[in-house]
Length: 156
Ligand code: IDP
Ligand code: MG
Image 1 (cartoon, rainbow, N blue to C red):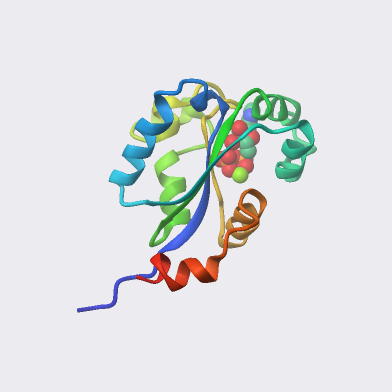
Image 2 (cartoon, rainbow, N blue to C red):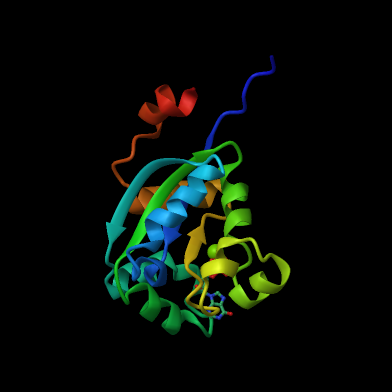
């Protein structure tokens, strides 16, 4: 038998609009697990303005930066580490295009098409590369020990 591909880690966010309805995160998590993602870690947070500015620093000069920081500090949200072979691409594919209206037109089965509200309030985040995933996992889960994870569940 060919060896099974090793799982990859990615960082996902269920943003404040999703978490405002307590029924949604568990329901969405069930759908995510049904797509063969494993939940490695989950944390609920409430951001201060400085946290949002730091995490989204690459967008500091964009027209939507103020709105984005306001949205991401508007209420509690969840950060998740997900694993699966090719998790980074698979999770971005499952959440769909950044803009929910575009998602509804072109990718109606994606999570942003189903749950997203506006271009800003688009319900989900996913790391866009391996380098970004490491940085974002470290940002939300500084204590996460990837070697320990690989030696156990991550290496299976
Ligand atoms: P991504 O989340 O799909 O990677 P990015 O371009 O990295 O998209 O943008 C980060 C976040 O900024 C988006 O998820 C969304 O919340 C917000 N955003 C991006 N583009 C727009 C826009 O055109 N209008 C309003 N908000 C936007
Ligand atoms: Mg991005």
